[in-house]
Image (spheres, rainbow, N blue to C red):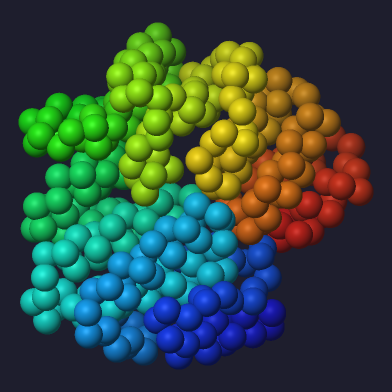
Length: 345
């Protein structure tokens, strides 16, 4: 009953203007499902069509707002704004509109892919990433093509296709087109090398992971320490490489090294709420693997304070909370977090 009411309420928001506030009042434990449902329907062309604006400026503005929603982990708002962007983008694409608008649709699909990866929706992720790649290639947007390749490599890795994930990421990193795009192209190459590093971590190749991570760190240093490509996976710079080390060391089997990497990070210096939430989530996993249960719970509660909608909606976090509930004594704090996240106590 609660879910039917939630979906009915969300359907009513579709009639709001394109540049409206985009907020949807929803049970945060169901936000992930809600966002996935809306994006899926928009990609399939289901639901009420949205009138296209007479110029691209409103779309550009709304995409910026959608990206801001993602970075701030405001998924209730994103569940309204991003599906609508895809609907309008397709309306313009089928009418044969400009290359700029095709690029914007590609970027909307890339943002959708990142959300599908978070929500562990691999089939829809493949669909969105491949559409992004085709749109980026047709528009000749070198950076969007590189980011599409990175997302495809992420999905291949999650499917267990490690050789293919490595090939996709490293081939894209070596593509000559990136050399002509200045610092942004160099940053895109760093992100792709970092992705390949993470694949090696998932394959258990600790030495290979560290070698490629060090290469990514050298690229970040070469760029002067700034965070570039903020709309590509949260950006690329020394801090984001260090954030990558936490999860990579964990998956390569060395949680002590992961904790050392976490200690070297200033959470306040990370470029977005989403990146800080990711860091806290990775640190919580590290504590769990080290058997430090109270530190793990404390870190999850910190992640909830930082980004409640992300913490309550993300399947990986729900899985960790569920594991904590059955692996040891519970507390009022843990049971409350589980309830707010829709995890059965």
